[in-house]
Image (cartoon, rainbow over all chains, first blue to last red; front, side):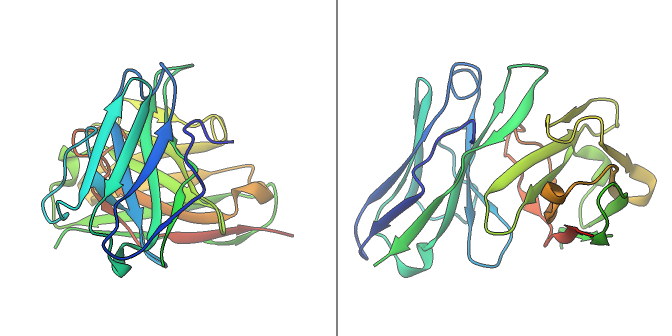
Length: 111
Length: 120
């Protein structure tokens, strides 16, 4: 059971807009930044969004992040076949002695 | 180019030990926090640990606390993960990553991973 909750799957057709949610609590998303990672099949994860809504250079502006309270979302607009991947949210959790936490991951299928 | 290369994975019996290494190149290793993350077969990412640039501040996931030890040698541009008392549930692909889960840019460089299999 992951500390951050994501839907296990999401899907869309090319050109569509899809969103992936990430639900946490006051000890993680509620007081810390959220990061999103994309893992293409057979590859290592790559940071897609940092500090809630910032895109690293090279990440298309089709990808956007947002955060409100104890939840966060990743939106992908203009969906493309190469976006088919697993997406993970991540944050620091201040409970106990402090720990990093990931969501369980969302497998995005482009139909 | 900026690169992380993990090594040291393999097959080990339950209760055994293994030491993973992560060789860094293409950046000033001593300027960065470093992290270990794992991924069990067919499962999601699990954060394990991070160490600050000087090696003095360290955090662990509860699942590995007391069994795993993260360390670094800045002179050798290397990160390590000493894994003791290994269990079947430690079977996974182990990644090292540059920076920490809460650093400004997140964990922005990842290695290709090294596989650890715990089985008798």
